[in-house]
Figure 1 (cartoon, rainbow, N blue to C red):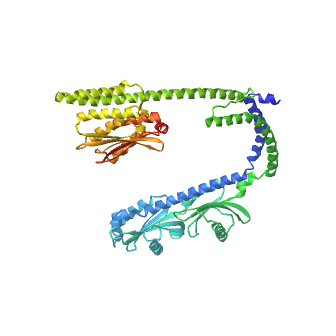
Figure 2: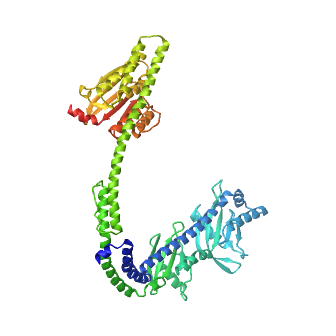
Figure 3: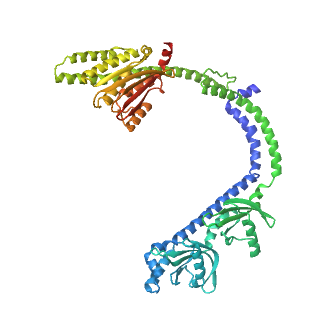
Length: 594
């Protein structure tokens, strides 16, 4: 039976797992758990209520912020500024103020009335439709006290009643601000917005509908701004007491807590506005959240424990059969990841995992073959690149030398031309005729001396060469054409532009087991920006033509032969010269043998 199960296709194994571990126990557990995850439901209800109260608070904040911005509009209206200082009220002033207040009134639909008191306590206003009479004179003294306390900033007056149409009362909250003269900065009036409390109803009723709770808004002094429908028969005093119990538990800018009111548990979620200091709080009966989740809870717990125990027993047996070969393969793959390709998987069964193991073994063999091919290809590529880079240098040098011969030949017949031609032959024989890639330091230095002899014929008494290389370094092997391109660069970019004769030094020494060579001149040097760009080009292997092919090709050949961590480094200072340092790791072993 075990062999039969182990040799089954993976699809049938998954069917068995599905029947025993998913279809039977999980279906039953899911059916019950959907009604019993009251903690999850409570958390979700809390998050949802918190998000809605936060959104409602943000909506109220944005509304109040808009009103505060509107209170600054008189500062930008020169006509209004003039009317507020004008003592008499004529037709022009009355019309201008009415038009401006009508404009402000229509900014928001919930604005019940907008008032503007001038410097001489004359009050102008505009009201919503349905309000024929209003009594601003009764409130002028209160406005003055509030505006003086607020200075130049907008002030919010909490919920209060105003008298309209002789005897009717309307519940509003107000936003007012002192208006100062733009020119004199003196107080010239007060602007007041009365906003109907029904504003909160439109914002908070969706919160109540979704949360099935009751939402209230309290200002920064604990005074009620708006409250939904409370308990039926509850007196105002009882409502105030309940509200105080809730506010006593508000400690943070945003949060939630559970509280019992008249023996009934509630979930309270609140948000305190940072702009207005108003608290938006919704109370939700826990029964409305948890009542569907509390049925059959004890039965669920007992049943779930039995099913889980059975499922664990079956899952342990089946998962062992399924995962043992996979674990073996994962272990071998980790060894391959760390570079060990000498691994082999021994499949025991003929199912999909066994086939996967066979393919894994064939993949390892193929990877080994590919790595071997890549290694051979890389070596051939490096060899071809080094030869191609060597061939780039020779035409450049031949061009410069032939230019020197042409200039001498055109000027006059001179036996120096014969010597120049002979030296050119030596240069060509070294760079082209010699086919080997490796030469000795002695050969490189001889090549440099011949090159300097060519230049001394063209520029008599212009250059002086000093070679300070230890005798032990002369037989050391090095790739061909390393020193001459650096010397050529020093001559044409450093010494030739210099007025008067110049000196070129080639120095060699041992440092940290490496042979180090330095080619330095006392030429014109280069500025910091050029030096930084040159070193960056050498370090990053740039292909640009800004610095010619000489230094770049030498640097690339060294990096190809000795590794990317080796190459040239240049230091220079304007007016004092340039120093090119070259370190070659492979020479150190030969040096120790010597």
